[in-house]
Length: 303
Image 1 (cartoon, rainbow, N blue to C red):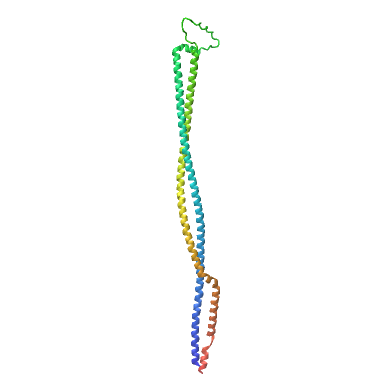
Image 2: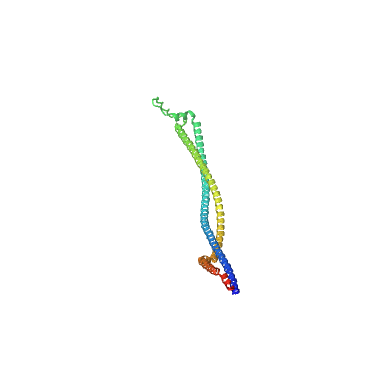
């Protein structure tokens, strides 16, 4: 009986050792599964957060690209408008120069005509003055009677002995003097008009030159901004490609996490509860085995 009891005690001891080993393994499984759950949640959350950041970046890059494309289109339109304005201004300057040249040619011709007229009239006047004599001319030019002055004697009767010079030379001389004076006034007016037209033309050329310089500077600045915008556009498109590739990788990573973790997350509570029930059952069985007084039964068997 003692030997049988002894064998039974050894068997129970081995069973209890096996139970302790099972309990240790189950506890470690509980712990490992919980750690795996936390890691899964962390990996999934991190991947989802990274994807959200990538999606926001994708939206920002898309908006930036649209803005850059609008900027490029606006700059192209503005540069084209400035170039057209320069071309039109250059045509205007050329046309104004041709008009000014024609006006000056007409002025030169008119001045020559006026001076030629005055020269001819002066020669005619000098010829008459030489023929009729200065005194006679002056008498006829200034021979109007003043009020209250004595009436001059009547002119002498024509003589039949010889030829007498015409008495109307003074009136002709006065008319010639009037024509010469008018011609000189016209010349002065032509000179004043020419000076004004030249001043207006010079002012127009100065203003046009300033406008052309400003437009050229503006084109240079806009072309610099255009080159910068195009560079940023290329950089943005490259960033889009890189971001899209990163999003694709993150999507695959998230898919892998779900493939690995969805089962654990879904059945975690059930598995933890089942394992805990197994632990509790083993502990109960171990307690039952530990509570049996096999030592007393062995002593009684000896007697």
